[in-house]
Image (tube, rainbow, N blue to C red; front, side, top):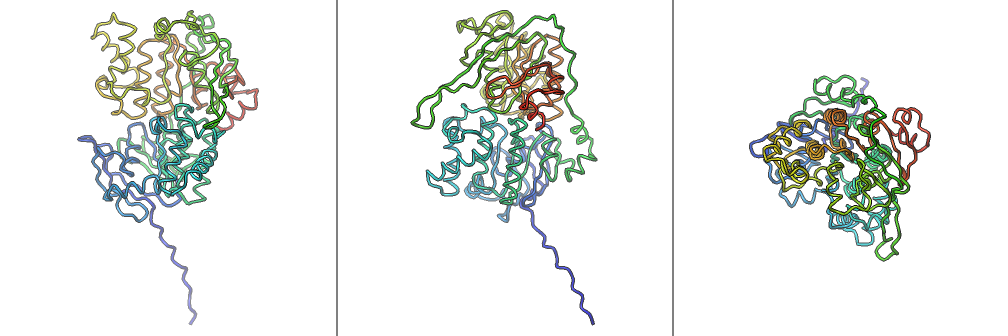
Length: 533
């Protein structure tokens, strides 16, 4: 009798992370309802959905970061039992070592009182027992691996001394320091330009293959999901409405909400403004330099971050400013609005800003407003939305009565898609995208001549991004406001900009009308930016 050899049974690999029937409540409000998902070792799962859908709340619940919530359900991780039942001391040992997290807003996640190096080496010494010198050397290597130039210099700088993209990469280096089993990445590339976004994704891929790390990616960037993730779970109103492989969901989405997300793209550009419109912003010879010390005891040297910048902007026109992180985009915007010391001449709405007294410059602030990249750090946590949006009205329009001021606040909030009752709440009660809309409302309520928009849609999901861009275009047509639009998202720049200025290392590489520049870029650097999208 001939014996038959049966194939060996394929071992069943238990999931690294298993979330079972998770419900998260803030008082009487339910943010996440009966959510279940699992993640295998080495797998990349993307959690997508609109702002306020519960993505970040779910991530925070895995690490039990919010003490003021009610958590029901079970969360099993790497055979360590139910994370929701572990004592706090056991959770502290897991946080940063076995499960690391990259937060959405690096400026608020990083401690402003400590250097970048202090914050990275703390993780290495606390969890891995590194000595002082070894921790510093490893921190420099981590910063270099995330694509930061001169990591041996940046390690001694404070968060406020770095650009948004540099801060994000520093936080990524901190999260990866202990080579965790699971990385929760909450919008990890929000502040990064296209080329650096690719570098970070390649870095995460390399580390995943090297140490078998799993990644739970939380994002509104569907292109990022398509490029990076293995599976995708779509959230709406605190529930998962669709899940599957990236190929399946993107090719044949089943849920109406998923179909809406995939169909959301920036709307076409407005018609070009009338060329006879007046110039509202003119700058010549703009230059910004800071004194920087090389290391703790090094000699102070001049660091030129912006040099020889000339530009003009007409009423109703949008100038898109693009370039890699650290190229000087935000510095240029702040220098034009005289928010940082700068050399050169700036004229806004016929008024020369150079040499004005503080009082005279403050009077002209109504004509030039700004929406910052990080809305949470730019909104006072101690003020209600009504106080935040109405602060400029009280200063620049003191003749308005309380009722008139409130009516204008309500009208502006509704213009940016927020209900009237939102004015009585505080910034912490809103999602990242909602906070950005509050920041836009604060700027628009004064009807400025020039509005600086520094990555205004970077924190927004695609559908809300489309709404905000449509709103900005409508307001531009209605009021003739000119936009300085800083962004690393070239798809957004293509949709909104009439002119495009490309910066590299603080100097203009290329400048021209948007259709021509996107169709026929003249410089190799511009072509490299477009190829990285």
